[in-house]
Image (tube, rainbow over all chains, first blue to last red):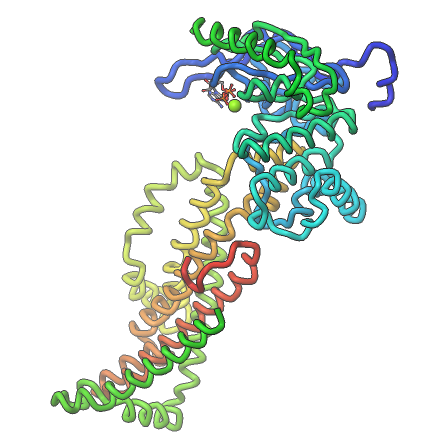
Length: 268
Length: 259
Ligand SMILES: Nc1ncnc2c1ncn2[C@@H]1O[C@H](COP(=O)(O)OP(=O)(O)OP(=O)(O)O)[C@@H](O)[C@H]1O
Ligand SMILES: [Mg+2]
């Protein structure tokens, strides 16, 4: 699937075409329009961050991409195919690690492969390779409760990558971690994404994280969420956010994003 | 750890000896007659007598088998209904008032009814046990299935798991801790259900011996039976607890029996 990557114009991996999602009100609650007329494209190998005020529909966007939810209007396409339900091209990672406490770390990483009916031996070798890539070599037989928050999130990343998805979705994956662990995991994620050439949609509230990790940042307005700005990050070296953070250009981007978010809040 | 465990074992043993001594001598010193509280030695002698003359092990066996049957059937039924209702909220909504009513009704009160229906067979006592075991299991399973993290289920769904896979790979294992706390309660309740069934009629089981001892004004026999019933309940509880320890081995270690 990733074979045509060599073509001069990178393929579009993820596309929203004029997508609106309304939630019917329950009982007396009125209907909520979570996102409205959202169009976006993410090209092969790109990392695109999505920022916006709380409740603007970021997670809704993720659910639509994962096929867990359907748009009220418009179309979501992954690899040019309309998303009609959960599919093998997409995997996600949330703030919660969602590791199953009754499975060892290796078994957790194998979870997606197991559902895909991958033979046990192959599952195991893939899982071990993924754990290695995520710096968890020593822990395949541990249970989740025996790991620290940062390690658990690494395991969640390994599980996400194990099914070799075309598009990786991340919803504030590091927001529950302490500042130091967060930086390390950001660096590891950036390296993993670029070495595996994954396409990624990354949701965050952390502006510096968005700038440091992404090729582009999309800014959403207050509910109903629309994309109000696209900022291309031109700091080189996307695979090392630690260095990127030190760039003199960083502050300019942060300032700009801060302004945009204030605007987004003010609009109501 | 092993030091404090040894200390606890010694303490427990000492306490047991003190308890037996108090039981043996204090009621007598206080002028309580043996037909009210027979001393420990008399209860022991009664036990030996019952082995020889009252087929006590036959009755222990009969009661134990009924407890096992009632527990297993009640637990299975509770699991089936619990999982079924947990997976269909609309069915639960329709049934919940009836379930609540049945849950509130004192289950042991059904014993005479079951005897009227099935006569002095094993069925009434097993049925009472089934009924009494059913609820804690069902309620715990239902509660657990309903409170499973939606995101965990969505994770499985996003990997294209079908309904059955979500059930086997998420809902069943996620509900295990709650199921086992239900089973622990159920294990001791099963004994109550069976004994009540036996009290109501028939000539088999420890419940029958209880009534028989009472009829003979044989306090020591009643004491023996109470102790034997306690023992059966304890074994049932420990069997569940040990199984639980095996099944839930992945949970962080906790103090024994603390959950
Ligand atoms: N299943 C649902 N039913 C009804 N309303 C929903 C549902 N899911 C989301 N919403 C509503 O849609 C809006 C957007 O929610 P969403 O979770 O996408 O926001 P978000 O941008 O991810 O917020 P946050 O930054 O706090 O995570 C919210 O107002 C929310 O109440
Ligand atoms: Mg969200």
